Image (cartoon, rainbow, N blue to C red; front, side):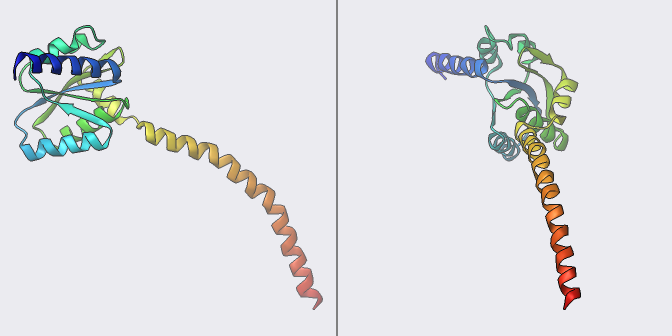
Length: 170
């Protein structure tokens, strides 16, 4: 990688870090290519990314971003997981780390809040944005459904009463 490519990588990562909501830093302790590809696929499907870069370049990219204080975590074979959905990166990283002890969560940040390992794990337990949207739609839809049932109930009872009288009269 020459200087121009390094500069482009730093600028690209710096721009990305300015747009995202959540960053999770992980330590790779010997994941195989297949395992790392699986993690990468899971991140991509959840709307996030995992990126491996030289620690020195990542530290340069972190400068002048709200995540600059995370630069102390970049020692050894690290990777950076990020997503625009505040929960996705943490959820995928924590779930993968629970299943595979070769991936270790080092910490992260959400917005201006820096998180330790426990903070990232607590964030991963929260429902994702899509899950919250589904719950909200269910809550909004429930009263309307109950209202329709209440309005239709008396009409149904009257129809059954008239049906019973009609059957009795025959």
